[in-house]
Image (tube, rainbow, N blue to C red; front, side):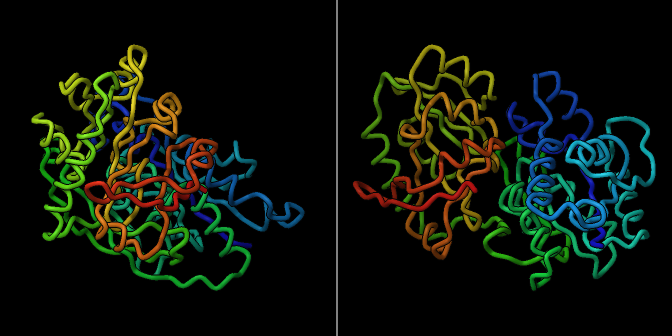
Length: 379
C-alpha cells in the first residue's frame, strides 16, 4: 500500500485576492481576513485528492491502495475525510490556525511514520518550511496555493498534483529530481522590489507535463520588444473600457506608455487614459465592473508560462467570467514564448470549469502589429 503523507497550510495564499501579495505572518493573515479574503488552500487540496482518488479501483485496501497519513483538522484531516479517505492522523495543533512550526512538526512526524511521499498544499513560504524539516531522500510534491510561487516543487495546478501522484501509485516510472525552493522578501515585494532568495532543494517527481518550472526573470535584450508591445496595446485602447492591468514588467511598460504610475507587482484599473485605482483587490475590480465593460491585460510568467493563478489572484475566476474570455489581452515577447520550448501557457484560477473553458488557442501580442496564436492549457 502506498503511504501518502498530506500537509495543508490552511492560510497559504490568503492575501492574494486582496492585493496583499503574500500570506507570511500572522498580521498579514489577519489583515487579509479583515479585507474579506477567503482561504483557498483546503479547497485546492480537495481537488488534488479527488484527482488522485478517481478512477483508482476502490476495491483495493484503503482507497485505491493508498494509506493517507496526515495532521489534525485543517492541516489535512478534514479535507482527507471530505475526499472519502479514512486518514491516519498524527500529532496535534492548538487551534485551526496552524503555524510554520506545525508544518515542520508534521514533516518530521510523517517521515517517522515512513511515508513514501509528502503531498503538501501551500506556497513558497510553506516550501521553505518543508525544506528546513525534510530529511535527504524524502520525496515531496506541492499543491500550488500561494501567491508568489517561484519554487519549482509545485505541480502546475491542483489537478496535476493528484494526477502525478496517481502515476506513482500505478507504478509508472517517474524520475525524482532535486528542484529549487525560492522565496521572495514579502515586505520588499509589497514595495515593488523583487528580492528572491534560494533556500535549498527538494526531491520531487519530475514530469514536465505536470510540474511547474522555477520562475525566471526577463532578459536584458527584451526592453525594446516590451516597448513595442506597449505601443501596440495603447494604440488600441478603447476609452469606454475599464482595463484591468495585471502585474509584471510588460504590463508596467504599458502603464509607462500611458504616462501612468503603475503597480509593478499589483493590479491597477485604467479607463479613458486615467488611473482609476491602483494595487486593487478582487472586490474593487468587481465593483468597477458593475459600472463599466472590462478587459484584462496580463503577461506570461517567465519560465513557468502561467497567465492566471500566479501573482495575480486579484483577477479571480469571478472577475474573468464577468469580463469574458474574448476580452483577455495577453502580452509577451517572442523570447519569453520561445523560452517555454513549445510548452503551453497555463491557467490555474481555482475554478476547474473556467480553466477548461480558457483552454485552447489565444492570441498573444508579441510586438508592434504582431501577434500569434498560442496554446493554453487549463487541465
